[in-house]
Length: 590
Image 1 (tube, one colour):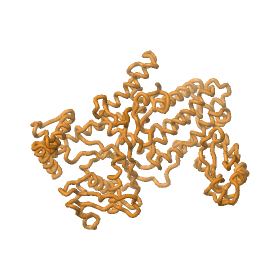
Image 2 (cartoon, one colour):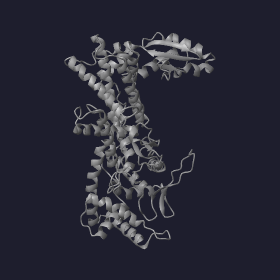
Image 3 (cartoon, one colour):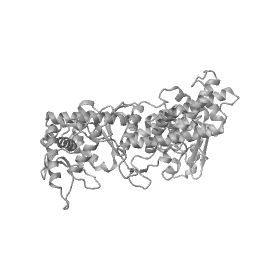
Image 4 (cartoon, one colour):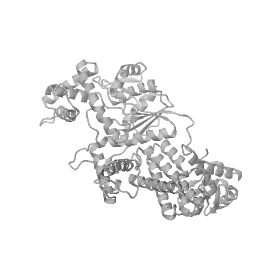
């Protein structure tokens, strides 16, 4: 189905061409002055110089053509050459009817269904998740859900840090402590202790003899693990078993899931052949004992260093395992594109191994490799968010703090007789997750933002709880109508024209709903979940204006009332669809 924006832009191009002008100038945009018009075209002003005519003269020619189209109820030329239009209520109501009858809310399927791998999570085993893992998980999950809603096959991979020196450190620490068996709580103490022990320095600023010896033993243990030593492998498998159980529990609390639970260890078997191929084809060469690949390209605005794919001591780096992981993914999943979600400060790493992957033919030249880098989550002091004691907060503690805050707000507004403590606790978990996710996703991913628990958990303003409160309010109205109408509601059979004609706020809400598919498409094309947040905040505001302006359930005209209800039903479906793409849900009541 042709979207409302596509249709009016097609009409605009036709009008320009009918007047003898280049149709590329004919494009309507949502007006930034809704008090004057709903859509606006600036093409006449852009065309004036080439046409040797005054912009207003061109605009008046176009208005004469556009006025003949039933899609518009108002068309006017305004100095110095704007073309302002309002959408016909009859046309708009037909658009909404089509949305209501569509399972996909008229969101078109892609021309080609692609397989897309989203690499997000990046947690390290043997360590609990902390707030440093939050943005990757939240943003990646949303991007994956948006792609799936569009119609693509989305494969999310947690890409665990489960290999390398950290394993050797734990193995040797366990050995020194004489621990044959260990629990998750043991690991949470052992790894930081082993890491600190390997970095201990003396008064001269150099590693102590004990630290240097421990580090060497850890490196040797890492090598034994990677060579398949049975004892090292047994310990590693137990670490993985304990860690995965904990990670899955914490990701479940965030409503984040992965199709693949692979890690760096899965890529190891691909590394030798990959490096051999790079060398034999002359793509990689030795430099100061290390194996490197030049990534500089003609047209670069700055100089980029070569990408190191093997250290001088023969060890692998992140670039090595990331490239080998691509080799594995190409063989197993044949993706059309990749999206990597990670800290913005890792931009050079992703640029480097992307270029190596293309240069070496690991991926096809036409495969799209996207790096979505995110900024930091800061406290009110503008510095990276910390606990009150100054440490890095565990993710589970952050979630609990938010849930407790929401529970407190519920108790301030609803008595125990209205909502029991048990029910309030369940609602708090749902609303708390919306506060956390919306608070993050409503910001452009690449930007830093201030984590403000009081603002994020507010039931007013641009917050997750406000969006959920709007959805719950609509649900309550629909339930009351169903009760009054004895279940006779039949959505999609009555157009919303009565609601659109009757009240300005009804038409504003309808116009917002009609933009659903173009917003979702833009969020996907630009890898920008914040656009969906902006949209549902707009829709929620328009609904609440409509709710305050119109007496919905007490309207005596039944046809008009049904029109109101249909508009509300569609609004709720749109909001529910959008919050699902953001990775949270709505409770039945608040």
